[in-house]
Amino acid sequence: MSQPPRKAESLYSDIFLPEETKAIRKEVRAFCDEVLAPVAHRLNTTPEAKENFARAEFEAMAKAGIYEIPYAADVGGRGLEYPTLATLTVLEELAYYSPSLASALYDGQAILVGKTLERAPAHIRNHYLPKLIKGEFVGCFATSEPNASTDLSVKSMETTATKVDGGYLVNGIKRWITNSPVGDLILVLCKTGETLTMLAADMHQPGVTVSAPDLKMGNHVQLTADITFKDVFVADDHVVGPKEGSGLRTAISALVLGRMGIGAVGVAMAQSAFDFSSHYMTQRKVFGQELARMQHWQYKFAEYATQLEMARSLYQKAAIRFDKEGGADIEAAMAKVVGSRLACDMARDAIQVCGAYGFVKTLSGPGKNFPLESIYRDAKIGEIYEGANEIQSWVIARHIFGREYTG
Image (cartoon, rainbow, N blue to C red; front, side, top):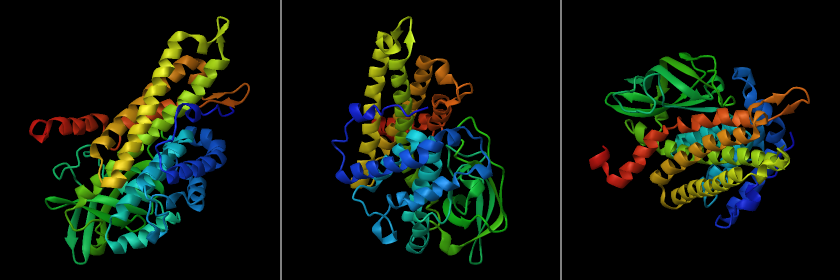
């Protein structure tokens, strides 16, 4: 189907954004219109398989300089004044066409892996970040396990890193690890005695085994799989953090940024569903009048337009605060909850108003593709991963009442 008009251009204003961020949005939108729009339906509806990894799109993003945007100039990045704001803007633009590509190849690659490497010791940072920016490797960020995901405590963690001469031997299983079927470098959170440590490991060395990709309800571009480590050696100088035992803080620092990213991806999905369905409502007649004339839907979509404005402003505020002050925990939690919930609600009502044209993936007779069913499938995971929304609500409550009451 032809792309409907972007309603955000008339309903939303970038008036508060820095000029550098506006320029990034324009640059990345042009890339997405040219590169992602023609293949979005295939990306969003093709089941997970190693051979279906979006390699061409990954390489195109690197060639276009999109991986330069989050980072400092000394490692080959753009050196922007507001890099987090620019990074989340990129995510929104990518996710407008393919949320699972945005999640895997930008949230996973550029935020979780890249931003962790950015704060790593200098020899790790300066070696790996230039390669990431050029698209020379695919990275993985491994915290979750079969029995540990939301709870990343030492008590729950089962993957161990045992000290040996010159480094560590890693043993255990990590689960739900983005990009693992095609990964080259993995940042893996391990138990080191009574503490947690983040290590950088080569996924091609002996002892690393990756399962076939998980078959999920949605987010097909985001390949996830189990990784089994059996006596995998990691050298002492590949501790990703200031020292052994700093792994939880290292992981959480990246996940806070990732939660802002999920908020931005949620806004993109909601905006895409809003654009398609609101345009459809002006074209489709029921009982002799366009759906857009029905007051129920007028009010419903007025409310969604308002929620989109609020959700977008929230993730942007989180990003700006992080860029200026180095932290935005409460805004990150709010942005994730609001953005991911809006994506689910908007997709559901978009399908409802579009009826069968919302429910269908491909209308075989005329050979037309439709986007809403994949948005609906892809939206749900936003309320679950990188810290379930219930945990984010607890984070917000902790800011309200304090640890004395919330723990």
